[in-house]
Structures are given as C-alpha cells and as structure tokens.
Amino acid sequence: YERAFRNDGVITPAIWEALEPWIPTLTELVKQSIDKTTDEIYFPNKSDRVPQLGWVFFRKYSPDSDRKSLKLHVDSNMHTLNIALNHNFQGGGLFYVKPPSDQEEETYDDRPDIPLRYKNYNWLNTVERKNTSDIVFPMMEEGDVLIHNFTVWHAVAPIEVGVRYSFVLFYDMDNPAIQSDFESYEEVKGGGGDDDDDDYVIPVTFYHEIENVEIDLAFLDKSAEDDDEWLLMIEEKMPPFVKVELDSYEGHIFHALISGTDEIVSTYVVRDDQQLYTIELKDDGINNDEF
Image 1 (cartoon, rainbow, N blue to C red):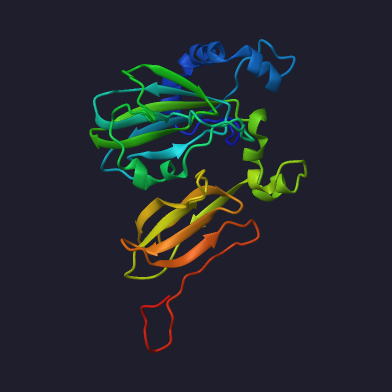
Image 2: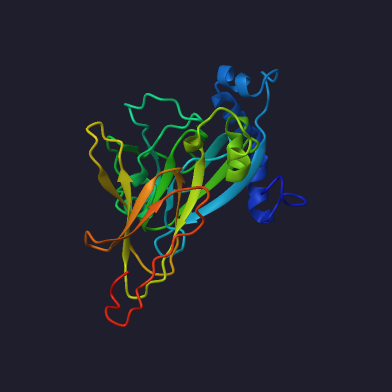
C-alpha cells in the first residue's frame, strides 16, 4: 500500500484486504503512543490529530533469500508500527541500537549520533540474537505490535533458520521534524541558514573495478580526546563491481586498504564538490601490482 504514488494505493490486494479492517485500531495505537507536547511543536493547532498512514510493507526475511537482514537505519517518516506475524525462526529479528550515553551536543535532526562502525553489513552479520550493552532485541510474539519514531536506530539481524514475516506501517510521511530528508543534499545546502556545512548528510558510494583484488574500507576516526587517530573498519573484503553505500559528512576521511594488510591504496575525503574517486593500477610495463 502506497498512499501517495498509486491510483488506489494498493499494490497487492489480497494482503491489503487482510490488513485493512485493522487499520483504525492500529492507527489508534500509534496515536496513543505519541507524546502530545512534542507533537504540538511539529503540528501546531492540531492537538487531537490522527496520524496519517502512508505506506504498508509486507516483509519476508530468510537465509536463502536476497533479504535476510536489514542494515542499521532510521526512518524518514515520523512514526513506524511493526507487527510480528510469526516467531518460529532462529536468530535474527528486529533490534535497536542504544544511543551513546555520553552524547552532549544536540544533532541537527534530533536523532542520536551512532558510531559509524555499526552502519554496515560486516558488523550486522556478526550480531547474535541477544541483548548487550549496545543493542536490544525486543521480545515479539506472533501478533505483537511495536511502535517507534524517527529518532530510533534499528535493524534486522540475519535470520539463521526459518522465515520471519512482518507488516511495517509508516505514518506521517511528511515529517516536519526532518524536512532535509525529503530534499536533495544540494537543495538543503543551498537553502541558506546558520548551520555549518558539516551538519549536512552526504550520501557516499564506494566502488572499485580492480579484478582479483579485495579492498578493506576504513574510516579515520579523529574524535578521540587524546588526539589519537583510529581506523574503524567499515567494510571488509570488498570485491570489485560491488557498491557500498553509507551516509557521511563533509570532511570525513576514509582509507582503502588491500584486504588483510596495512597497505593504503587510496584516501578519500568527503566533499560535496568531489563526485568521484578512482583507483587504478599503474600501467608502466614494470610493476603491474602498484596503484
């Protein structure tokens, strides 16, 4: 179901017919979960408003399908409702990453800052279904409903055995709290204002075409208080012709290394005016293994 982009909004009639009678009840649950004081900031003079359903997704995760997990992310819509349709699978499942307890500065979109090392499939593929100091797996039985807002970082860990089914309902697609999510980076940056350029998210894609070579992608972390620099592994053993996409910021630095070594073959500095970095093998007729 996509309210904004289809004539009748329905893509799969059989699934929508099964869910439609429950929409008023589910919408009321979302309404009850909303903090009214905060909501009135974003929707003034609408103190008793009804959340607007935008999209409905039917999700299937299994070890043998293309979708067996979902990388850590936040939603652009204001409120999300998850319905567990079964629990007879092993491993995996929806989990949340706790916001850092030592975060002092406010972010431009009210979302907590999450360490970059969590925002890739290499880390996600190591996640086991157990609660830790950093992540929480909510207990969800068949038919249970879970609601969160746009500030919550969440993911689906890889399914090990069986199949996981769920419904996901997006409410309030036109989210006034994060209008920049609905604009291109150029539009946001060109809009003026007093914010620094560093506050704007820049979507970045890493990609190489070096056959028979695997690349490790690492982020250069300069945030340590003692001025030390740390390399945080973002993606290991990147094969050629495979894209790695993530969100970054102006000035962030990444290193591309020969996988399993300390040999840096290229360094990338994220700039809004730098559209492409290319790594090529030297063709000097002497040593074809140099970059």
